[in-house]
Structure formats: C-alpha cells, structure tokens
Image 1: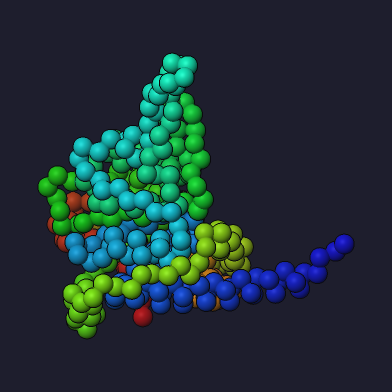
Image 2 (image 1 turned 30 degrees about the horizontal axis):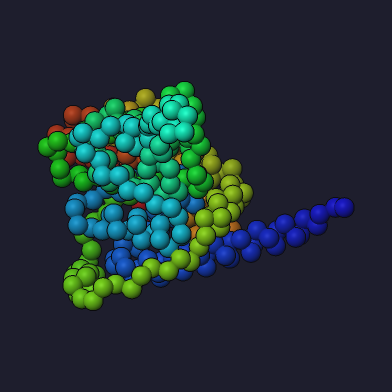
Length: 334
C-alpha cells in the first residue's frame, strides 16, 4: 500500500502548528512565575527542542535557577539540581557502587546507586565553582547521554538536557570552564536586569501570597516528538552555507576573517558550532510556527551559539573588546 505524500506534508504542517501552540502555553504558564525573562525562556526551550544543552550566564538574583525549575514543572520532566561546590566529586554527579550484604545468604555484592544525573533535566547550579575534574564528569553524559561507572555503561533517560548556571562576577573560588566543556553547550544564554516595570512586578508578586503552582502543559513524549520534527525541518542549502560561513569568519586564520577577528581572537568556533547553529535555528523556526529556516534565524541566535566558543586574546582584553562584540560585528547591521 502506497503512502500518499500529501498526508506526510499535512502531518508536518500540523506538527508546526502544535509546536507554536506549545510555545504559547509554556510562555503563558512559566510567565506567571518568572517575570521579564521571555527571551531566556525561549532560548532554553530552543536548546531543549533542538536536543542541546544551555548555559545561563547572569548576576545573582535574576531567577536563573527558578526559570529552569519552572520549565521542568511545566513539561513534567524529572528534575534534579546539583549545587556545584569546590569539594564536589565526580561520583556525586554520576553515582557510585555501594557494597551491600544479603542478610539471608551473607553474600556481599556491589549495587550501583544512581546519581542526580539520571533525570530528564539536570540543573548544574554555579558550575564554575567546582574543579575541572568534576566538571568533566558531565562531558560523557552531555555528549553521549550515558555514564560509565566501574566498566559498566548506564543510559540516561530521554529526553536528557543539562542547563547550567554561571555567575560572571564571582571570581574568587571559581574555575573557568574548559573550552571542551563550553563547546558542549549549544547556547550560552545571557540574562540581564529586568526593565523597571518588570522589576516592580517581581517585587510585588514575590512579597505577596504564595504563587499559584505551575501546571503541566506538555508531556516528555511530546518533547521528544518535537525534537524529531526539528530534524526534519526544511533547511535550504544557502542557509547551511551561511551558517558555515559565519562560523568560519570567527577564525583568525580564515581568509574571510574581519580585521577585528584577526586582531582580537586567539581561535574561533569549530564545526560543532555550525551544527548547533543550524539545529537551534530549526528549533526557533518551529517554535514560532514557521515552516522553513531563514538566515534571520541564524543571525538572531549567532551570539548565543558562537560567543562562548570564541576565545579572545590579551589585545582584546586591553581594548575591552569581548567575544560578544566580535560576533556581533560579523552580523548584518540594521
């Protein structure tokens, strides 16, 4: 029996419509608890739907942890939070084997006690406050969606996503994230202070009666279905070439590099950045109810995808030029 191709097209159209409705529901529900951070919420959902991980960067008190927790509740995802500290060990993340004794036989056996990484959504709070050895315990989990302990591999539940937070103003007792780990994050989401009216609402509503509980509006299975739709989103070849071109222009050795890149950048983003840029653009188009990826989607997400992968040199620091500035200089000027 042949399948009518028109039915497949109609199914994709319906998936896009449902994705747009899902975003509206999530924004409305989480927005009741978290005020003035709609763009950060959209970026978190882009990372989740695209199958990537997100790094939230902002000063203390901007509701970074609360935003991730509210999103997990809204999607009915199993949620664990790890407070990263200087004495945190890798086994505190992945889990460890414990020796147990069978009281009936007296036999002793090892049993694997699962760590907090076994969740749909893992919040790594203040990830830069723990040493690189412990930070690296997340690498296999983030990339392979599994952990290996004592020679045995354990798969993580799906969907699986890591959202980490980082406070940029705290330097004492912190450990900069290694480039290899930064590259695992699809998006680095920078949160800023809210506008005055939003800040007034935050103070008014958080000092009043207890907030209304967040309702579940989407099941984990639906999240996985959206991840599959993202992979099928039509992406013209010129959009893929634009993504690759944008990434290559962050490399000072590339002929297309601008003067700012040659002057300020030690090394630029790698091929994974182009993959993440295209996937994130697909997810953004899907959540907005659009049927095709456009270059504007790439440009809108370029800073979030590329800036944390661009390493600036001492000349840039002396001139107070940041990686964000460099990436913005590569984008079309309005």
